[in-house]
Length: 514
Image 1: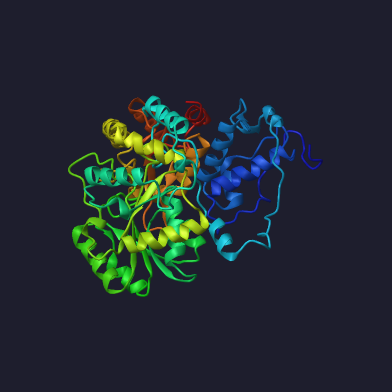
Image 2 (image 1 turned 90 degrees about the vertical axis):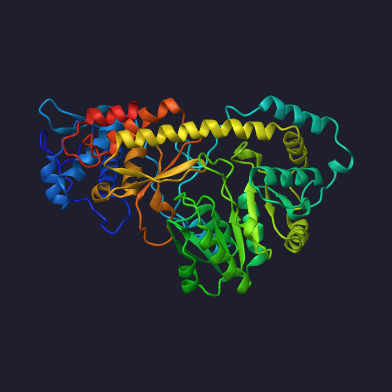
């Protein structure tokens, strides 16, 4: 024990530094400081702290902040209550191992500035969660038929198919994709206008380098799809955030901010993350300006196969008469993410330039996967699977909406989007006054629930606060219990741990354990 600490004397946190300019919430800074001191032996087991009011006075923060920090540490097992109601370091904490403290390492000298900019994006991804946005459910996928077609492709390949394929993809798959788009999306195109890619990210990487020179301006939606910004940044583009309202991308604002842009990247059928659809007037305005100013438009039509109400919204490319729109699609969300097969649709001149350049860099996408997918589509398995998943996802979406409405009516307002695998629950004014969406996500993460904060998708200062809920992996029967846990963690109706000084440590532990 510290030689200056007298037995029975309760310790303070007066020496702790609080960074009020940091994006890390105060309660997380305090909990991190206490946790570190416990792990380093500065606060050994049995150490008791001053009361929350005294510590709040020392640190110049509210008592709620201190109580929230303590409740997180209660849930993790670092603290426990004494019979007299004070806070004490738990004996089990000596079992924890502190990760080594490592100073930030400068970027290696060989790393380009563009690559450093790419790595600088603050964005958490690839976490396992029932609420992961855009993540599909593969439990109902017809693996029996798929594995049969894969074996067939391997067992009886033609000699030419074992050699290099055309960079634009196998002719049979291009033909099936053209048929699929005509029947599912109402997009009429020929196989010669289709290129098989390794997914949306890879396609955007190639198209960005094909269209842009370093420093060229690109309109991106604000808020928008962060993964798209990565590929554009790696190509050396200057990103120009253009706000999105209830009618989609505000074209007039894009013109005002970047009249010399070379490329526009949009999600018009189902904007990510807000879920709004771009109105016809905006679509025509966008195409007219792009045509008159020699600007390319990339239309990411992600998840539009899953429309749960009304009729399908026509794609932007369906309105394009001058070949300005490059249409992106993928099978990752319809089938499985690791398939890594997608496609672009564009005019033949663009396809020709794309294919010739790709042949020098990437050659082509996996041939065996293309053959199996072509047969999978030809035999009708993809269409049947798509119809089945539409019903499943629609039911999950409805269950999520009902759970949010029932459990957190004063805190969250559900967006009206009816397409895809996610929805946005915007914070009410009451909720925003209580905490930010990043603080809410951090509190829930401590309880083992990962939900993406909406503000993470802004380049500039966020103008909206909310949570992005994916429902592809969310089973109907789990919606209400999970929202109950979220309400217990951050909701106003249940006197949550993030803001209510009277919540007990037992409640927080229950949130995490359940």
